[in-house]
Length: 164
Length: 168
Image (cartoon, rainbow over all chains, first blue to last red; front, top):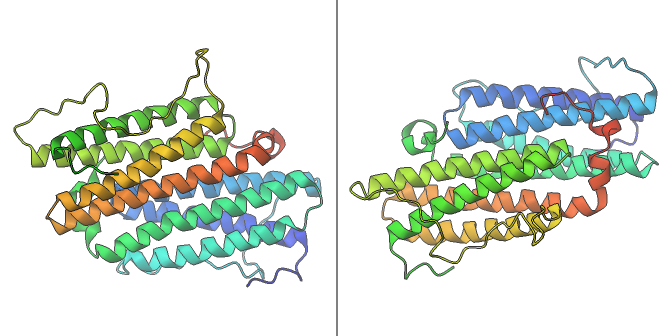
């Protein structure tokens, strides 16, 4: 359970934007690392959605705080979990497991953040972001379970390299 | 879905046709919607269907190297279709199309699950299971979009929130 009660809305929005930037970077980096065509597609899709989330949050930030300047903190006190990428020798399932946890935390975070806003439109956008994070979780879960089944599928199952 | 009475080659060809039809349908709807998230998700689904098609074509060629890969014009197996246009010729409401797409994805899940026991190779069976579960994911994505659409469609097209980079 993440307690965001003690943080002001501005701090929370900045932490959320930073978290989306980081997630985009992790998913893009992983997509460049894997050979499984399906997993690569999904990681690129997730990277793209996190980037759209960032831009949506930036729009909300500008609307609510009347500024065009957004300065992201290097570090944030808000306990949003990072995705642990490990090193190149770690099995992909470890990274996927960490990403699943981060997506579930993000789902909860946006649901709670929605309550901070009185206007229904922003509240609804936050709730949609929360649901999207949950769909990211289920996309990753399938990949995680598959990675566990095919321990070496990334290199030994050529038909997985289907597609452009 | 009972596919026991059909030959494997027929099943694979119908599966390929279904993936082609789904890819086309998703791309066509993606071109018409304004919500950048829905557009991106439909394009993602289209790309995955394309890869499923490539995979099925690979299985067909490997299993039936002497047979021609000729896609039937009409499916010989009753699989739900994604109907894009109404009787007047104009595109149907997106919610109605998503409803059709959800039914098609559910059927695709059942279709791939029914193909699994046709193969003895363990890797092939696991991969078909993987594809089946991916279709279930598609269903879940579409359901989320469909459920949220009735409440927030106008907001997701509101440019004060959805002013995103030109690339989207």
